[in-house]
Image: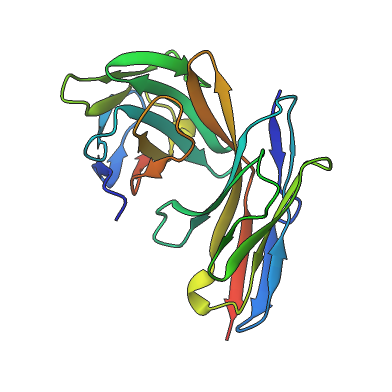
Length: 113
Length: 116
C-alpha cells in the first residue's frame, strides 16, 4: 500500500459525458501528479500540482482539467469524453516538488462506451 | 527531448533463473535519477530500484540490481533468482527536472513472465 488513494477504481460512462477522478496523496506529501496509461501511448504525464499550485503540464487535453485543494487532495476532471479517453489514470504523490521518487495510487480505470 | 527506450516488449524466464531487462535513455542533463517500476496484474505501480546518476556504484535491492552505464546511457535491470511473483510489466523511467517541477518519463515497458 503506497498510501495514495484514488477513487473510483472503475468507471464506465458514455461518450460526451463528464467524470471526476479523485486522489488523496500520502500524508505529508505536497506534490500530486496525474498520469494516463493507455495501451498505445504508454504512461503519459498529464499535470503536476505542488501545494495547490500548478507546476507543470504535460500532454493534457483542453477537455481535461485538474486542481489541488487546500487539504492537498486533487481532482482530475475529464469532459466531453471520447472513446480514446478510455485508459487507466494514475495519481502519484511525493513530498516536495523535486524529490525523485513518486508513490503511485492503484489507478482509476475509465471506460468510455 | 528526453526519451526512454525499452527494446524488449516481452520476456520470459524460468523460476530461479536470472533475467536482464534493457533500458536506454537520451538526455543532455548531467545529473538525474533513473528508476525501475513494476506493475503486476493488480496494476499498482511499485518502485523496484532507483539510481542517481552521480553515483558510480550500481544500486542493489535484494534480488534486484542495475547495470548503470552513464556514458552509454544504459540502465538495465537484473533480477536474480526469479520468482513467480516477479511476473509483471516493468517500466524504466527517467526523472526530468524543469522549471521547479519534475516528472517521470517512462519507457513503453517490458512484460516479464516467470514460468514455474
